[in-house]
Image (cartoon, rainbow, N blue to C red; front, top):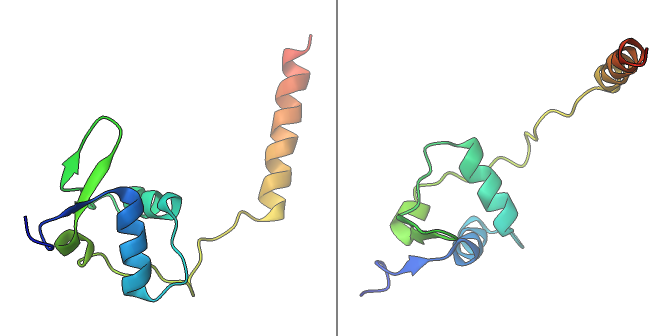
Length: 94
């Protein structure tokens, strides 16, 4: 098996992508989130407790944008959710 055909674990894949993208670090959790957000990312092999990746498949993944973070929920929305929860508790309390 050549170096290009070697299968990488998720941790090794995250390290490979960090090096390729020039990031100081890239965690396995961040790689898992990227994989689930971009539903078209499929590992070369999926076992019971691991996903195995080929370098050629990893090379096709675009670098995530660090300048466009995901939108955070506004404080007003969070307060409305709490109010709704309190209303439910009042209704259910009698």
